[in-house]
Figure 1 (cartoon, rainbow, N blue to C red):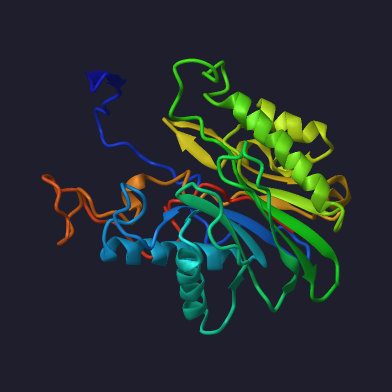
Figure 2: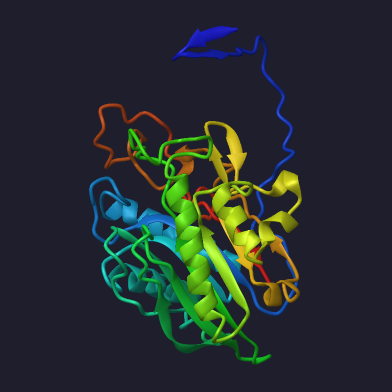
Length: 332
């Protein structure tokens, strides 16, 4: 037993033997169905480099970030994808990502739902889709309720083959961080839980208006609440099904913090849509991986590393692994 950095650590006395019981996969598990919807948090995809610690610091990091995210999104093989944490600079960052996806495909494989700047936060939600598979019905809808940290973005789609209509809503609730000293403090569900509950209620009002177009509504995104916390229970009590709970418990995680696993990322379907969902899965390309595999070059043996200690191996590869995303919910 060894104690260092305020923690006890076990030191092996001989070379340990590792058993690969959780191998990486090249793609998510199959979920059946005819149309697929996915969600991904691209963790500050910023074309404005060096934006106060958000996203890539320089062109090299941005190229590495883009390659990983493109590889991930294409491997999802989804027809509609909701994105969290895209830079809120109009269509610039989103167009950049869509162009990279289409370049990798060698054709116009994806298009984006046009919203322009959404709200006042530095990041926003976005939705991309495959025009060959679905077409938009009307324009994007944005909930302007002031309770939202980042306004939800919704788009109704029509399946080009089956002609069915459904609406996807991209969300990103208030985080558990930046705790206040009074008021909405941590009472066991992280700070700002009361605000997240109010955001859930506002989202339900928004979803009610969207159901007037078509009753099939899918709520996606980073709700910054675990599956048994108040915001999720509020949405479930209104008749939405938490599709995450169809996933086996041992596989039901999309996030790892200090060695503890859970899911803050959700897919919740209206009652009319639930019966049409054939499957859902999580793709653990980030939560099971060490952060040293990400696109950043700080502290790594890279020619452009400017830190005082550039000694860590640069293990970067342009693959989905450690693409620095948090949600892998996938349904069909």
